[in-house]
Length: 120
Image (tube, rainbow, N blue to C red):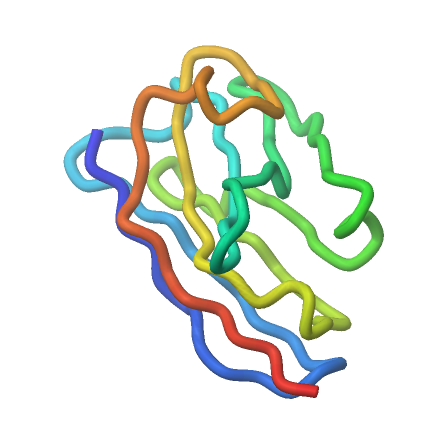
């Protein structure tokens, strides 16, 4: 599965961005999907995930209430990010796997990442 993220950019604190993750040639309906992020000098961390079947979602405490993960269609998963903070600055990655998890090692397929920069 090839995953391609888009929608990153530069935004002021308090602003919003919507990231998209698209698959080419495959449906994402068969996979649990996750979003992770990695800031400079830090390890990759879990952001949000959605179950393979059904609408159940999980979020990191740091983004709960501000970010929303959703399946837009069979080939696209989005991450709506509101009330952005400078500490949200990172490269954001989408990932696909057989089972939902907060652990990056449980995901089999990864996108190349998209940069999100939040200025204060």
